[in-house]
Length: 134
Image (cartoon, rainbow, N blue to C red; front, side, top):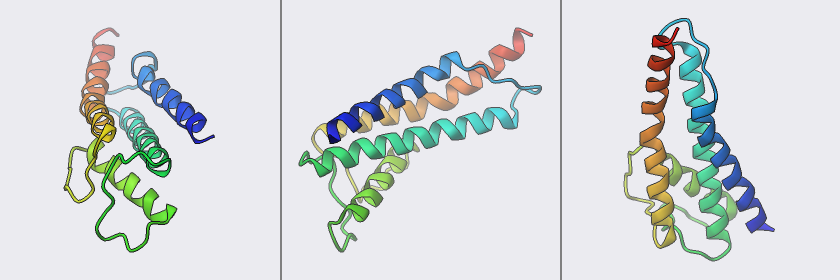
């Protein structure tokens, strides 16, 4: 059941990534609040999606990250917190190092970091490109 949910999360993430190239941001200025809002929505979608991937794999016995040393218990709530934290630190390229990816989690983190780097460049490029073709 958890793996089916993982497939759904992966499909939503891929759909969100492909929307970078298909959604047209309507803006009256080069950088508008609409463009910023779209970027924030993409970041939140990616952050939550990758956090769910980390959590589902961790719950099913695949060690994808080292839990925070501050986690007093190993319940699902602290696991969700660590998953969201790891996803946010990876996507935003902060990477404090207290929760680190291991095993296959490294490859997931690489993909997430790549998406985190590409998203702002794509939105700025699309905004400028759309502005020049008016």
